Each structure stands twice: as structure tokens, then as C-alpha cells.
Length: 239
Image (cartoon, rainbow, N blue to C red; front, side, top):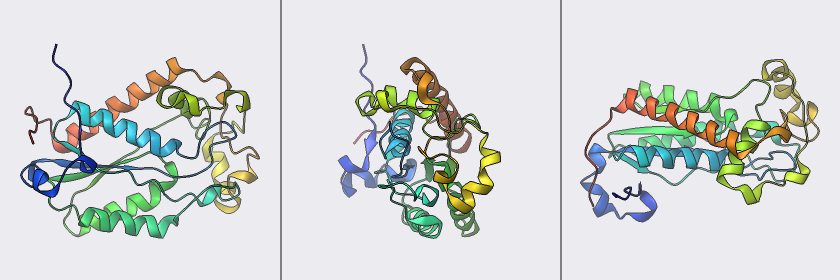
């Protein structure tokens, strides 16, 4: 039985080991956040999901090199909850622009984002970089409009990725109104104004089985995105 080849990570490589493979590699950067996820989930959910999906992509496509994750994002809407750390939209946009500019040694860059609040600055950064002639790509997982934060979807995913981090006894329903209806107040007053416990959805029916299905669907979507943008090289790297 052939053992799977472990993913290539910048954290495990030296520059001389990377020099030959970088021109035929795609740098994959997980983008997350450090923000409240209700009374039952840790602050790192979005980063954990982005890292896990990036690792699955790297296991499936040997042309991937994994960058360390960016664990901070634009999370101002969660500022009403202690522990949320946000760098804001402008800083995140600048961070992504400068990061991708520095990655010209690679054949491409894919930004795997686990936090919906990063969408606007991420889009602006990609637009600015493409105007410079670079071609970065970004991918975000999708989810139900009435279950957008710390609900069944994210809780189920965490029951697979980090089950010990889920405080199951503290899981409680938040607001279940569709995100589109909540956005006006979210933008002006933040999550606490629409959900005192910080949950947008209902985590009480979460399960590891559902989480595995979600992660599999997201992984398939991410791999399709990668193949559409970068192709699927048949040969693996050797270092």
C-alpha cells in the first residue's frame, strides 16, 4: 500500500529546497480570523477550517506549497464580544496585496479564506493585484443563509476537526433569520445587536457526520477551483 505524500509546507522547507520547485508550484495561503464563535466554539474556527481545507487540497494536488495561515482578519462586526481581534478591512487588503507581491517566485497564489467578513477586502486586493498583472485567485466555502456563524454548519465541522474544542453543553440557538435580512443592522451595529450570544444559526443539531459531509463538499469545491485555475499536474515534487 502506497503511503500518501505529506504536503509541502513553507514551515518545513529552506529556501534552497524550495528554489527549484517554486516556479512550478502554487502557493496556497489559508486566511482566517480570530473572533467569537458563540459560547460553544473557539475563536479560531475560521482559521481551523481554512487550514484543514488547504491541507486537503495539498494532499490531492502535489503542486501545492502550503504557507503558514493568516490568523487575523476583518472582524469588526464581532467587536462587541471580548477576545475578538480584528485588523480591519484596509489592513487586511494591504496585507494580502503585499503578501502576494512577495510570492512572485511561485507559478500562482491561491487564497483559501475561511471568514466571510474578509470577502470585501480580499476582493479588492485581488482586483488591485490583477491590475498589476498578477493573477491570484481566492476561494471561500459557502453555507446556508440562515446558518452563517457558529451554527450547525461550523459546529459540525469543528466536531470533526477539533472535537475537544466544542463546548457542547453551552451550545444554544442564536438568530436564524437569513443573513441578507440581518446585514443592514450587522453593518451599523454589529453581531451583538442581532444575536446577544453571537450565534447566527442553530448549532444544537450539529453532528460529526454532518461535519464530514460539509468538509468533503467544501474540499471538492476547492479542488475544482484549483484545477480550473491551475490545472492538475500529474507528477509530484521531490525535495
